[in-house]
Image 1 (cartoon, rainbow, N blue to C red):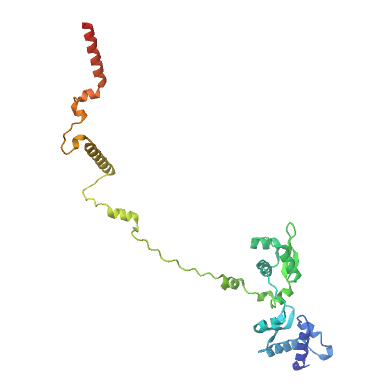
Image 2 (image 1 turned 90 degrees about the vertical axis):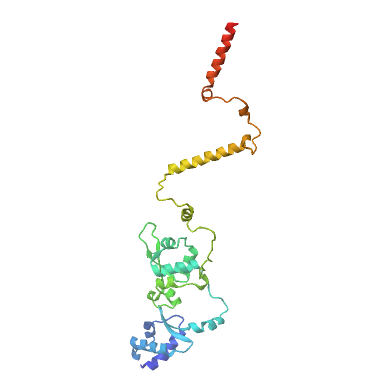
Length: 286
């Protein structure tokens, strides 16, 4: 049978089928008398795919086989034929599905370890009900956790022929959501005036220069400081005394009394003993 004769038959079969059809399934449509080989069917499919250029439909090969489907550029208008809204999936469900797709076979505890949160049982149940994942085995560890993997239905839903057509993880990391984009603006410069750039340098500049021949030590500066304090204290004491007046007309109480000598001030007990001895002599003479 010629290719031009195979094309309408295969096209009609694909449109009548509710599921994608493989080359082997299309070959079952013909008898031995038709003398149709799988190579001829493949050539007819390639010709049909080329005939869809510029049309609103395309012949797409997915994991389950070949199917006709609406092109993405006209999908927004065709979707208005159905009143029901498309399903919206949570971020947790999509993250779980992505981990199963990229790291299959994988267990539920491993998914929880990667995501850092507990995987809800409803998520696993929803993915199994949609036939996107299935149990492919059990891990040989205590507890025997189930190993999950993707199905052909998962590949068909996302228009994939095999897992090799999944985008690389490097491209996914480079993808950026415009809504989550954050452009950091530089902060305005803050001008601080009348402040030294380096306090140590400022203190060094204010200090008086020291002569080359002056080899002063910290002890000497300390002594000079103490002498200055003593001189200041004496000046304050002189100013506070009555004798420091401009005219000096009054005398202090200490000036009216006799001034004691240094020896008397140093040994006041000796004066007390001398007075006591003199009093005893006068009593003996009486």
